[in-house]
Length: 137
Image (tube, rainbow, N blue to C red):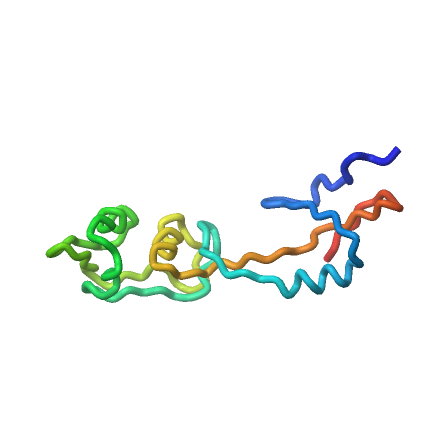
C-alpha cells in the first residue's frame, strides 16, 4: 500500500507548494529556472539598491496630503505645508545590502519601488515507483 503523502518532513521551510507533474525533471528544472517575477520587498529581505530622497516637496509630491501622517509614523521627517507633504531633510530609505525592516519595506511599496524577487525552486523529487524522496540540489 502506497503512502498518501510522500515523506517530505524536514525538507522544506517557509512557503511550500507541492506540484504533481508528469514531466522529466530536467525539463521542469529548465522551465522553472527561466521563471522570475519582480515584486515588492518584504521585511527581512535584502535591499538591492540604495534609495535616498532629497528634502523638499518633489520626493512626495504624488501623494495626497492625508498620507503625511503615515510617512511620519514610518519614521520619515515630514511636515504638511500648504496642503503638500514636505520632506524636511535628506532621507535614506535603505542602503544596498541592508536587511529591510517593516517600515522600510512599506516606504518602498508606497514609492512603488520593487526589490523583491519571486522564484520557484525544486527542493525535492518524489519517485512514486521507488516510493522515495530525493533532495534536489
